[in-house]
Image 1: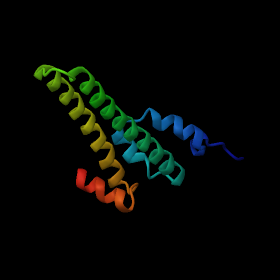
Image 2 (image 1 turned 180 degrees about the vertical axis):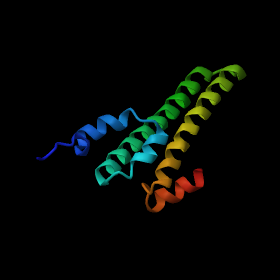
Image 3 (image 1 turned 45 degrees about the horizontal axis):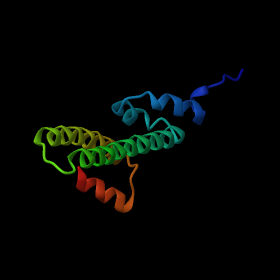
Image 4 (image 1 turned 90 degrees about the vertical axis):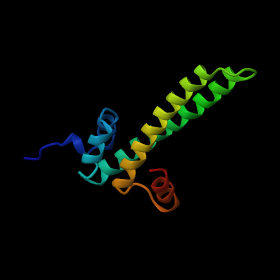
Length: 113
């Protein structure tokens, strides 16, 4: 008798990986090729979100600081920007360790880390 395994369907895998932590993604990415590709896609999405957060923080800081200098506001933005950058580097490190980066992209991430 044939048993049905829903854990080989890309749509179900995509739903699962959205809820996994970064550490767990690094562990389960080697289950099979489908898991690897879905996790690679999820990590790229998470990385893009961190990049966009960084850009939004820069724009917001520039708008609020235009015309005057307030060190407290600037420090607040730099703290948020640093936190965003740390998350971005964690994602890049996970992608690098699991062989999800190629060519120039790989070299840039090595430099960032």
